[in-house]
Length: 173
Image 1 (cartoon, rainbow, N blue to C red):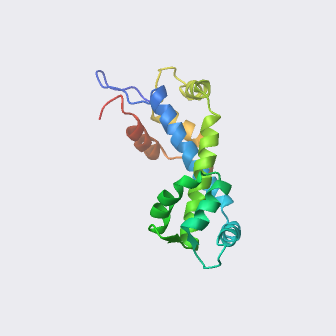
Image 2: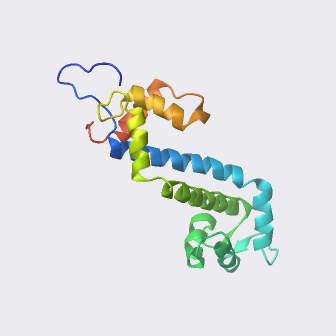
Image 3: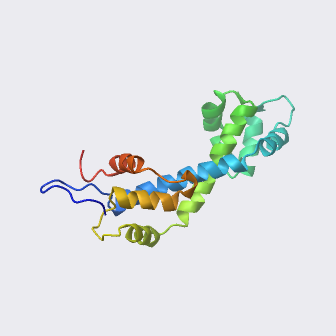
């Protein structure tokens, strides 16, 4: 880890449970980014036209009930989807695009997280707990984030400390 805490001061750091929560959130974020790339305007428009069977320019509940199972979602979720994305009536193209991106992100995240075992989290934790203190401190977290999220171009230490404060619930305020 990093520097030495003054005598009597608690050293902040993520335990395995907190680190696991952070990794799960990073995976979720990354899958949302992937979904945005997969749900290209052309693909969304193509799906919208396929599901807008009456060519009304919007997708109603009946059309969505037919579309959802093709998107991997049980049809009984129609009303919830309509309420969340279409104010309960119908979905325009932008609302359908939002729904599509969210569904892809959820499916990608579920698959990615299902592939991660408790041992995988422990292995990653041990890899980044370089001082073997049993916690991931700010310096170790900064290195971990740079490995887990290379697309950021490098996480600043101040950001690592903010993230540490958010996820480190066992050390207190």
